[in-house]
Length: 108
Image (cartoon, rainbow, N blue to C red):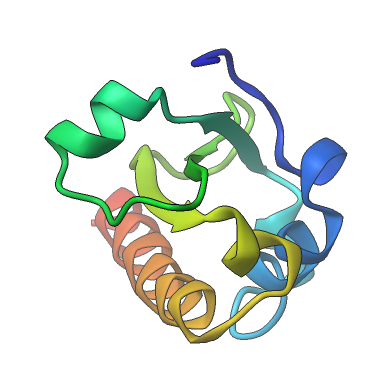
């Protein structure tokens, strides 16, 4: 537990959902997406509801990306990653806005 791995390995549907619109394909190609299971003690410390495994998703630009920013983190119950739901969609919207802000900051 606590080790990072590629998001698409454990949760391919979540990976596809996170990298769909409004995030364009060119941007998605330079975002590194990783996931780790949160240890129970850490999840409890964060006040996350019990009864289901929680995961932390980390998204950051690859070193070849034309912009810098992040990393952007989201915490989700396993069910939301296996069958993407509103929480994941809302994270995608916030992520898209943060990525666009990072792109704008890079050009200024």
